[in-house]
Length: 157
Image 1: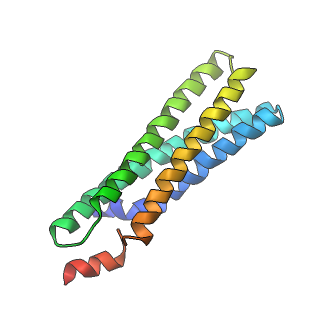
Image 2: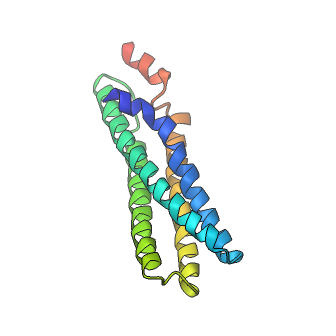
């Protein structure tokens, strides 16, 4: 499954971009009172959740590879990986729940008035999870070298 692990750094940028765009579109839809932006936000949220699912799946594969490298003698900060993984899962579940709730509200024609503002607050909360997950992922790569050629060389020594 190392192939899937190698896809993780490439895949993660899609849910980051899509879910961040969702937040922006949700805000624009409320501020400018345009139904088009609200509908676009809903679609982008769906695509972002699918992307986050792929990112978490490939991230789990990358974590498995990191544990194999650890057994082979690589120095890997397991706590940092666990923190990143925890926030990634929180982000995935938060936005999945938000998608389910938003779909329910939209199908029942209740996405009006103050409900829209509640979703803006929820979207901004989700954005904090995206930020924290990305920050911890960046720390893994740039501070600890996890998943880089440097770690592969370290194992061969």
